[in-house]
Image 1 (tube, one colour):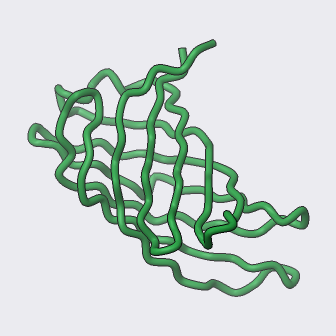
Image 2 (cartoon, one colour):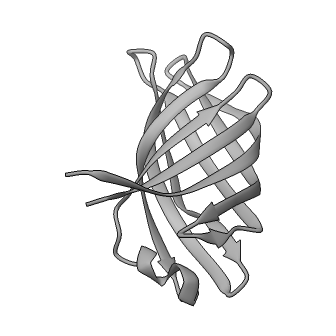
Length: 136
């Protein structure tokens, strides 16, 4: 198996604390894309809400269950994602996981049925970089 980079999207993030689970934190994060490209197509909007909870080992596990979409000139793509992450020394976080898209936009139709592996890195100011890779 290999990874082929298919896009990068920059987003601002806004966290919200949710009720703890057995004394472990839980968060909801809203991400709004401010720039990027996917499959060579300019992304002019990216929006997602995901929830994550800290697991007993100290890492985070989260999901975005069909609550994200990307807008391009010829349509939109919706997506779901799951992943795991850790807090970084600089006050941000680093995540990795998989996501799955559905779209009728001609420029993004290649995403249908594709397993996309991602890296989601958030700096201490809440700016996230979402790197997307095709798993082949």
